[in-house]
Image 1 (cartoon, rainbow, N blue to C red):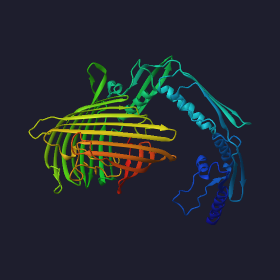
Image 2 (image 1 turned 90 degrees about the vertical axis):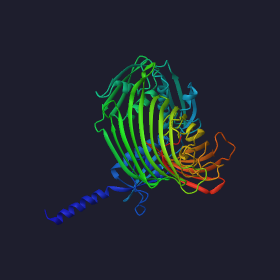
Image 3 (image 1 turned 120 degrees about the horizontal axis):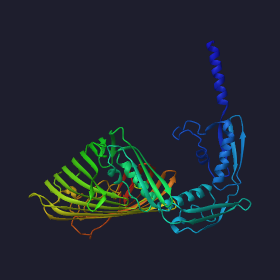
Image 4 (image 1 turned 120 degrees about the vertical axis):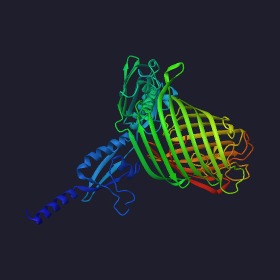
Length: 573
């Protein structure tokens, strides 16, 4: 075929294809804007930064009928049952003329639900009836019932719509019946992983009250071992029992390496490297090496984790984990440089809402102060201390919690082992509470720290400092020292830190927040007669599967020139 004819044919094909594409526009009465409708119809648009391009999307004319049906379905799901949609087509444009008309209003809500279930109803009297909210209300109530152990419930949820009067009548009636029990538990595990490792991760045993939360948390802890490519937990109801079937597929690629560069507010530019082998010599053991390098910090850590190393005395069905960490670090702070060798041996037990960490630590620390800084002593310090940490965590999620309480108590006691050993006690207690009411989430946090020295002084890095993304956000990381010290950035032996924060969705996964932080640090033990440092601020959170990505701006309310911007990934509450 002549090349000229090929070009003509291709031109005709492209012309026909382009003639099928037309600009999509909406004419509405203001109930929903164009952006919302494009999103709901899943219409791809030009990115906002491509400002030089026409922002109006195009669609194939063959999709007119399907888009019209989708628009009607969307409006009805939002309570507009009398919606009228008309498509008008020109040479270049398809215009959907939409009239929402009067919405359906909730006239009454009748239920016999207990308050904890009734608050899950997302419909309100005298407000618009939204089918989406009605469906989600049923879903959330059923989810909560399974969390509470009721698997034989009978929930009757109805929405009666009176189209002529534009009203709806909602009813929720529940018969809970008795709670279910955990029945038979069947485990299918790889050959090189003992079943005790699996059972040590389960938050239930045969005969316990059933709870879907316990099952879901067990799924998370099994996945957290990193020894499996797939974790599958199936539940099968048999009368009033829930039988559990656990299937685990072994990890094929056991070695993982990660490297990257990044930036931290307190450290500046940094490079990181991590090497990890999972299921090391079987039984889900793990060995890893972490390296971090920046201008202010050099850090090497070796960890060895051995799950279910031994059964607890008098509790043969409960096992403890062993974790050993060896660390070498060099840190350059404004007031001193620190070099540290440390080893921490942990014996840990997690069970549903509770966590216990008992162990012993060894630290050899060298402090070299930078210049003539008062209250800071340089030299070599040797610390030998047993430690304990107890946690109660009722939050509904560890990554993005919306409700619950977190309580933590930690204690360490320095013991004399060499002539220059420091003997001391250090206690930290922390409480967090988070509560969501509608779309508004209120979170509060309080922390108390106390240090008592008995013989030989502690190195500066073991004392309390404040400031940073998880502390007082008007200040940089560890920039708040003892208020009653003669010099700045000197650590304290008494610390109180509190935070209250309110957050609310702005758009989809983006949230806005305001906060109030206070910090008290004094140089002496059990000394509270000093001033707090108060800060206020605002920030934004983008919710991701690994936790919120947060940016905060805080300023000291008594000194506006003292302000800082913080960037972090992870939850503070």
